[in-house]
Image 1 (cartoon, rainbow, N blue to C red):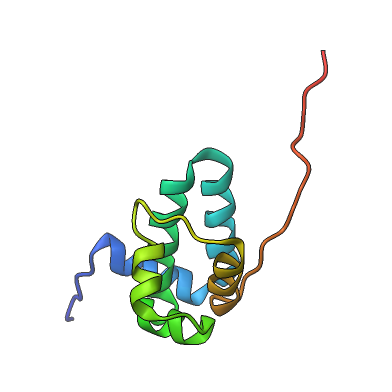
Image 2 (image 1 turned 45 degrees about the horizontal axis):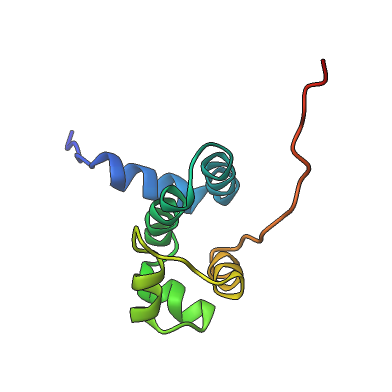
Length: 103
């Protein structure tokens, strides 16, 4: 029986590709716990599951070079660009109230 070894990244990309809902949960988790740089890293990682940066750029109607720069650690996408990137991955932005604990 032949065994195929995959990297953690390859396995994660495949998981996100097969389960877009899990990908959305991952991004929501990053948004709750991380900062903007973490979000850019997560979006770069997710772009691989959705055909790569060039394909996501094509689907989002954004220049691929611009998307690479946007998703860099120092990237600061405009809301319009972020929305287009997420739509290309089959997701959208949503606003939710922050749950506060009252004393």
